[in-house]
Amino acid sequence: MSVPDLRGSPGVRWQSLALPAAGRELHVRVFRPDPAPHGWLVWAHGGSWRAGSVDGWHDGTADLAAAAGATVVSVDYRLAPGHRHPAALVDVLTALDWAQSQSPTPVAVGGDSAGGTLAACAALVWRDRRRPLAAQVLAYPPIDPECRAPSYRRHPLAFPSRAGLISAWRDHRGASPRHPAAHGATPLYSTPHESDDLGGLAPAVLAVGGADPVADDVRGYAALLHAAGNTVELREFDGLPHGTFLTDPGLRDWLGTAYSDHYRRSA
Image 1 (cartoon, rainbow, N blue to C red):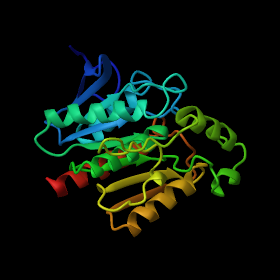
Image 2: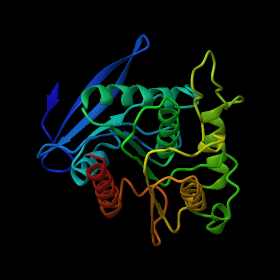
Image 3: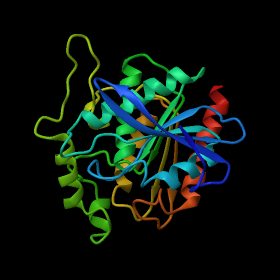
Image 4: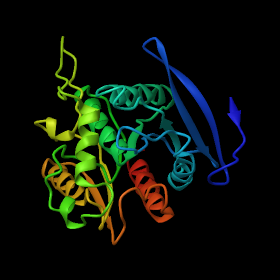
């Protein structure tokens, strides 16, 4: 049922939907800007895989929809540790399937922080399944479960702490993080590092703050994507910490504009 826009950007209508998902319901919130939107973008919220919701991310995703000029589908995916990998990824893939059924052109996937990691993994799954994807929009995604990069130690008091993020990775991935293909199915990655091939992926838009502990993860992943022959656009925001999708309109505007540019090129 559609509801009036009481929060978020003016001119963005939104509605909550329950999608069928293997004997249960997956809740999503769909944001549609005026005028007619340019494409569909499925968004996974942050929260270290253990927290966050479409309600908590309402204003941010509404603003993103306005900046992108796109229909944004915010996914209330299952959270760790009650639901370990691949539950959250499966929910994002379910939302992608539904969004593609609504769109005449390829959809895109994106997310912030832990949601950005899920989006990057979803892009790999769709590549493996030979399904076209318009773009992957990744705001400061953690990539390395061991958090080994120097940026994790550069600002010892910054959020997220290295120890806290390692704990979150373990809650999310469990004791057996790899989810190999079975009976001809494609693997479900918990991190892009589990893929031996990063070629043939959707154009990548990446953003990270200069004071973010995951900054080196993002820089490194952008370099790997570029080396594998993908289109990559990386922007570093000087001095910004982690988690600024919710607090910084400039970062949301850039993400939305970068997505819109890729959409127009592919349309």
